[in-house]
Length: 395
Image (cartoon, rainbow, N blue to C red; front, side, top):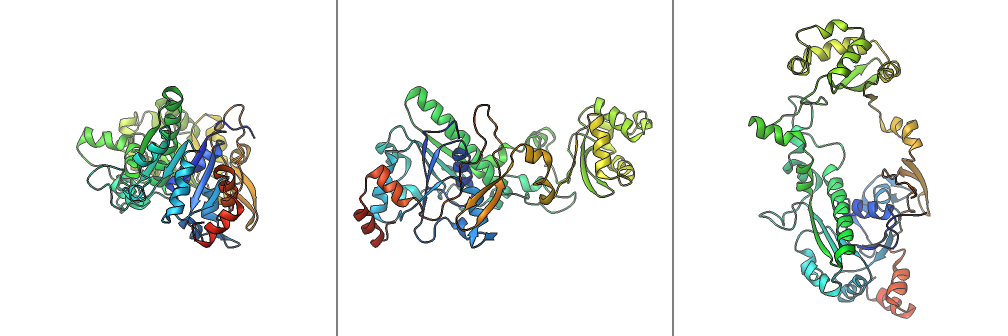
């Protein structure tokens, strides 16, 4: 499979979600990822459900195609192995609490002395600098501190966590973005880079109009459910057999929407004549629309709206989403074979590039599966040396 990052080698010291999501993105594009895990226990994510024949589905969904090196970083010989590997890689990833890598003697300044061209990327809750940078940060904490929970949920309801670990995932994506920029810059200048990505920063950066609305009005936005704060109708609506979303983003679409409902009278109704008036009367407008949509099935509504070019879609359960013809056509559900779990289906690669394969690079590794391979291939360790390291608890 031809992949654009073939030849890039990454030493991945991350665990759980944010860091592994970053290295998964890079691995999906062809980078060789050497995932360092604790001997015997491995990444904490190996203990997260759901489990498939005893193997963590959570772990497998984030670590496909990587190589697992079981290594004790607290053992001096383990640190020695890492230092030797640093000379052979392009990128090092870590998502420990700030200060941890320095205590291990593997901080950026330590690493750059070994490999001046290294791209060193750190992902953490609050970043490497600032008054609370060393506080522990998990996804739900970053969602709270970053502000996204304050605008998520039903109107009048309590702040709500987004349904996926969006802070972790965003931080992983921004770290991968930073790594690619740093590699491009290294090709131009010959110099490595230090990348510092915070989960809280990542959340704050994607709040789009919530931040600008606050500065424009002086009022903090509140949860408003699924509707758009600046457009109407732009919301979720109940049909006879479920829910769907309808997004009317301009006056041309509004005219088409009224045509679809056979309610051209809305075009002259003073409550709905323009977007500003529709926003002011959003509740009554929604109730009038739902009187109509509740009498129709989603399939019928989709046909009607799509014929007129009106943006819409069914609110799919996971069961429906993974069987959707568009999702399947785009190769977004792929199957791999695991030596313990058997056949597993997981999300595919959303980035499609002309001339490059979008097949996932391989199955997730068993704990320590590639330890001997890596030590022999890159460090020229003998079988006898590897046996000694195992006896000493290094690997």
